[in-house]
Amino acid sequence: MSGKSILVVAVLATIAAFSPKADAQQRSEQAQIETVPPTIALPLILDWQDAVHSNAHRLLVALPRVPSALSVAIVRVESEAAKAGIWPVGVILMFVSLVGIAMEWSVRSLQHRAWREHQSAKHGVMELLPLMSFTLVSGIVYIVPDWPPLTGAVLFIYGLGAIGFRLAWAICAMAFISGALTTFMFRRSMLFVAIFIFAITTNACGTTLSVNPDSMRCVSAMFSILLLVVSSEAVWRHRVTSGKHVLRRKILRTVGLLALWFCWFAGLHIVFWLGIYAIAFPIVLPLASRLGKTYGETHWPRSGDSSVAAAISERGFRAIVVSVAVLWLVGVWQIYPNGSERLHSLLDIFILGLLKSLLVLLAADLGWNVARVMIDRKLSSVLSDGQLSRSEIAHRARLRTLLPIFRNGLAALVFVITILTVLAEMGIEVGPLIAGAGIFGVAIGFGSQTLVKDIISGIFYLMDDAFRVGEYIQSGSYMGTVESFSLRSVRLRHHRGSIFTVPFGELGAVQNMSRDWAIDTFSLRLGLDADIQKAKKLARDVGAILLEDPEIGALILEPLKLKGVEQIGDFGIEVSFTFTAVPGNQSLIRRSAQAMIREVFLENGVSFAHPTVQLGTYGNAQGGRGNSLTPTRTQEKHV
Image (tube, rainbow, N blue to C red; front, top):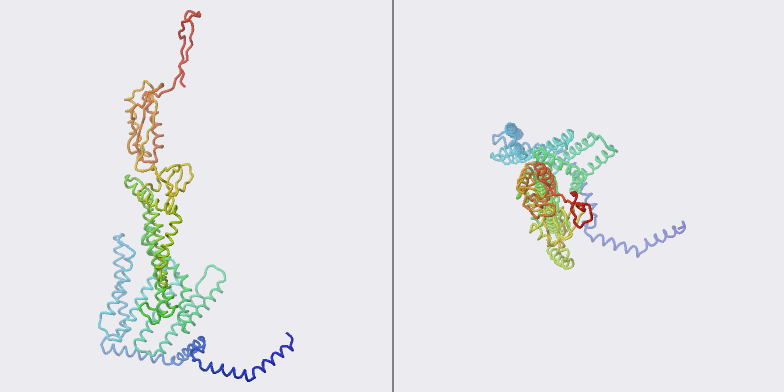
């Protein structure tokens, strides 16, 4: 567009703006704006900006009055204590803390002495006794005496703060011992916690003592600035041994801390806590898992990763951290399950359901991991049979078969129940979903009868205990060792290495070759002149020798014996031998028995049969061609 065109358009727009029609339209729009309430006409951002300016102005006005307001509150408490004839509050707090520390030290000394004498008395839960003694003694001293109203309130609030600080100290000390915290971070963490707890307790005491709210806001702002300085100092002084762009990361973290502080100061509490969670969760959750795992391995070293207590400690620490964070966020959001003053918007319902769902997921995760560890621990304990009775070996084999199936079924059950519970907490009606799933399942069942047949057949095979993992079975043209199960098929490993995956519906009659015991029979041919009674005695001796063999003796259930003569052939006598053994070991025992029988029989003069052929030459006895033929030479050859 040229310059002249732009000038023409501008002139026309100016004329239209000052025309009577435009003037009337502007007056109508102005009248509409004046009729709209100011709270709706002003954007929310402007309201928030005015609130921030007003808050900052009140803080600046109230800042000079903070020392006098705090002095008045302190004088009120001290005068009340003086009238009651008791010590000042500060002295009482120090005295109670010393009493709690002394009690904790005494309990810890008794524990160490007991652990030196009886090592079995050491247990992870028992280490909480010193902390519990500190909490109990301090709480009794704070609550039981009949304190004056203001003095009792101040003592109770600061007493809770002291107990909270002691608990935080114990947690940070455990993290430091496990290696999750360095010395520098441990000191800065304790300094941050001390300032934070003191700020909360001071604010609560100021509210209890009716101190001017603006003055208490000033105190809170000063504490927040102090916490910001401590956090920034920790960021800049923390040594990073490796990594790129260290300076850039420190600058970004400092800017993030400043942004979080501004959100808190500006009243954006939800944004502030969400930012805190976004920064803290990637650090705190791995730290909690590592702390719980180290705690479990330290106090239950024999169990290792398969210990139920170790699993509870590892998952429990993380669940506690997330649960506390969720409950704190609920308090910040001011959503109460029993109250309905704010449960009127979809956002509140959604946030409440989401937070409840997080708690449900935590409980499901903890319960499933504990159950999985218990099943795996039981499964690992029955993997080897060792020197056990046949009934115990059979019991272990059945456990090896059923436990993996039970574990998979339990996982599916926990998953389904968790999903349904989460949907219910989110406000979704699960009744129609369950009904629809049932109808859909019936339709699927009719459409996939073979699959349903396989699953139901597998259930009945397991109920009948037809086969177990590790047993050798045969069904039709399928044979092999049972390796594993699924919901619809069994996995067989043939003795030559191939694998059959056979649906349960196609198995039919199953021949189990590995259940309880197996009888093996083999035959040998002795010479026609062999002494059968002597052979029986020698067979019993061979059976006794095999029973004493360290390798195969434990596999023999009934010793080797000679059953008797089966038949008499042209070249010898066929006799049969039999023994009873643990299923699957017949070949090993048979080979050893046959080699030993040959050696013992030959040493004791019991010959084995050999097929023979007689060769002869016939001629005239008088050297002529007469009809009378007589053998002149015979030769026997073994074939």
